[in-house]
Amino acid sequence: QGKINKIANKKERRGKRNWDIRFCRKAVRNYQTVLEQWKQSRRTSNDGGGFEDDMVTPSLVSLVFSSLLRCNWPPKELSKRVRDLEKLIGTLGKTSMTDELSLKLLEANGKAGNVGRTLSLLEYRKAYAPKYPQEFMYALQAIHSASLELRLNRNNFLGDHRQPSIDNPTRFLDAILVNMHQRKVPLENHFAAKMLETYACSGRAAKAMHAHYKVVMKPSEGTKRRISMKWNDPPPYYKVPSEISHDQEITLPGREEKLTKLEWECREDYWPRPLAAAFSFSDSLQNGGVGGYAPMELGIDGWNAMIKVCCHRGAIWRALQIFRETMPNRNLEPNAKTYLYLLQALARLGDVPTMRKLW
Image (cartoon, rainbow, N blue to C red; front, top):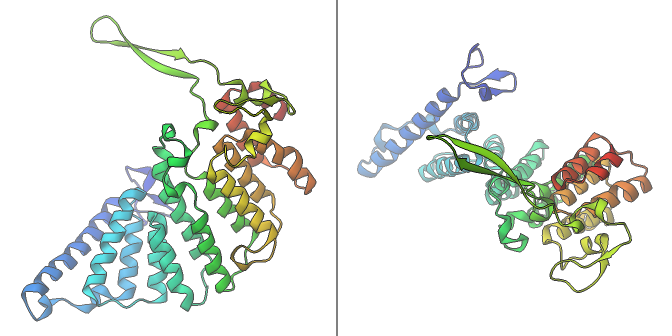
């Protein structure tokens, strides 16, 4: 492995090595088949079916899960295979849990999106010294992997209040912070920014998007079809920042009050709970008390994460407020990511005048 010069699938590159995905999948499948056969033979014989305990040592099982992670399975398929393999090895009852194995199981479940199992392994690893800071990154990776299905197939017609529970990861983040505090792991600024980014990993809400056109297929001569674009109506004026002024009071559909767009975006009864939860989590980080940590100041990465959350939830005015007021008040200079998130959000709404002002 790692010395193959030509590989058909370029996605097989992992780090400094080129992994043969088919070989890894075959190796894991053969190993699982051997364990299944021994499990069946043990039911019919008393001698253990000729099975050797060397096949399920903690070090070997850790290597098997490493090979499984190199099979390039999507998170949904990887989740099932990790759970099946872990259950199979557990039913044999011959593998003891070690520091190395628990860390590898934490990595595998994190990349597979098994959030509950990942948090359970974090709780189990409280008995060990936190020698590996990446184990908490694996816990955040579990939230991202579990949100991938929602991000790819999000049904915005359901509304934000009927989305899966992974859309609001606050309880998972609280559990991670409590575990870190109990193990005396310091909360650094870049990790706090990564935690805030989990509120934006489940895709864009309907308020943040607009379908400017649709593709229409029209019959033509013979069996051929002609593809054309049909332009839809422009987005509602209250979605586009350049269409209304900062202090202009408007009435939104289904509401009777007249408020500015920024005031509407600050109301928790109108905007989705994940957006309100993200600001509550951000305030708790700055005011202290969350997980037992002292108050901290968010850096540029943390406020960029909050801008990203606002843009994904359709709170453009709130994102612009962070850009124009919050960051200058804290002597923070916007970087490339700041402008990238704002320009992407404005482009989806077709707000060219505001994009030019930022540019």
